[in-house]
Image (cartoon, rainbow, N blue to C red; front, top):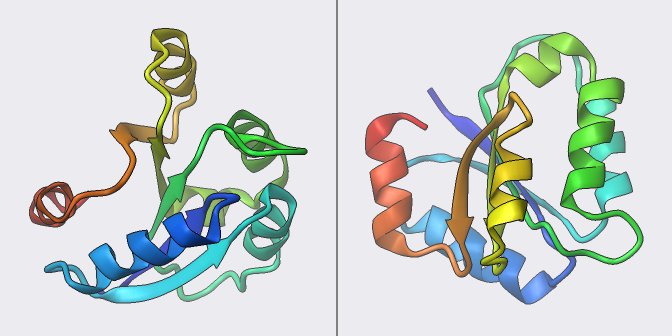
Length: 131
């Protein structure tokens, strides 16, 4: 099944590089990227109910205005349940802070904590596992 990949990072260069890694991987899917948390939340809130496309979200932690943890709070409180259930969230960050990792995994939808930049081998591993 074709997936949708949603990239949320304030750095458009990282979004571009991550897109290229996804495109060259074993996974197929559409890629939508955002440099602002609020725009990503609004996008998810407005998605049609059906069909429920599996979505993989790669989320940065450190961003201006609203950060990755703000996204997670808004995601759980504002995104319709049926859309939220179709999403798996992977933190894709340069943070090496153990407290960030611990906090990330306190959110039910966070499935992984990955280091930037996303490497092809890691993406292929995730594809093989089926996310």
